Length: 200
Image (cartoon, rainbow, N blue to C red):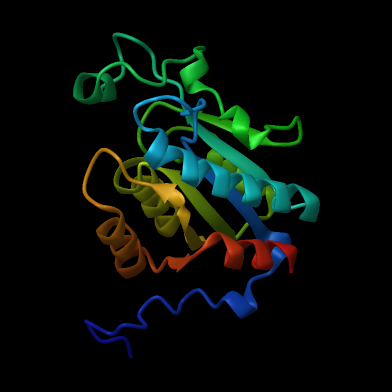
């Protein structure tokens, strides 16, 4: 029985039982190159950690999936809240070049926070035979949290890589990660642990 307040209530995801052949690396809104920009100190470390994950995943044959903002100017509701960002077809809506995107990777464009909302992500994951998502990206409390929520609602096992995930718009990193652990049974691990999992 799981009791409220039980510190182990996210043990639905047993890392020792994860089948690497059914995993995918899901990178959420790691776009452009923040080097030299105002958010470099926040974003760059996470992107560099994610680069370790993408390299390991490709070498192990684990699918790498990018969910990228691709907003339509003058239409998408997010733009009224956050201003122009991630406009479809611009460099700011492309996977970060620091992640060395490859032709074998998958890109799912999205117009809302969640990578699942009215996109082809669920169909792609089903066709790939995926049951476990290794998630990273930004912002922790917006697009990552909403994507993880939909992953949970669709019965995926969820792993969130804390040091490859960044917060810069809403809330703080610790509370965002704790929320996903508590409400979506997400395992929170660091990049080194995730790479070991990917490598088997």
